[in-house]
Length: 284
Image (cartoon, rainbow, N blue to C red; front, side, top):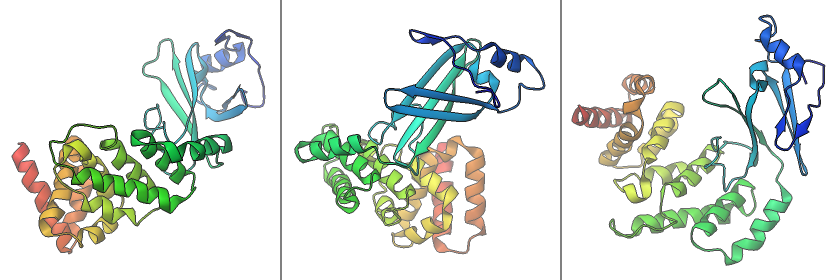
């Protein structure tokens, strides 16, 4: 649909012909920059609509349309959302464009067939699959506390292993990603747990500092409150991990955070700033 005009392009196999009015809209300097293109796509029982597109998104090239659920959206072209239960996405890449552009939408309805399948599978699942199912069901708000606690216990069990333990399919970054996503979804109880685990355990906590960096940038006061419950050495460690995994590559974010830390009168802020300064000096 372009404005109020609807088109049903002829489809042959996995290709379709871009309607001439859309190509004309892109060619027009007056219409090219109007976000008045809507794509409505149906596949089996799903119908998804992507409004507010620019004509360039429908130039000849490649389209990828997909759906991601909680067990798979970390591996797709979209990021794990902080709300909603599933994601639909459209990736468009015209023949002379690079890279492709991603449009995504989150949906709040629980896909009942998916929920039913996960509930049926959970009692016999183990290892990575048990972990993934627990996270997905928590997102769907099915037995939230029980599935959340399952993930927390898995994390603690992973951290209790000797540092040189063999790799497995449970104790990796994805476990922390799951708990961090549940925190961003509103489970503030997880903040202290996620701060408590700070440590130099790349086998389990690989790049956990990225989460700490985003926390410092978005929720400084909450982080300071959580750091208050930790010894000063660990307060510094949290902020050092944030610098090592993220802030040293993002100068604007680092400047925002250090400015807020310097403006604070809290001891936790002073320890955090000290930790960042120490690790930054070592990196030079």
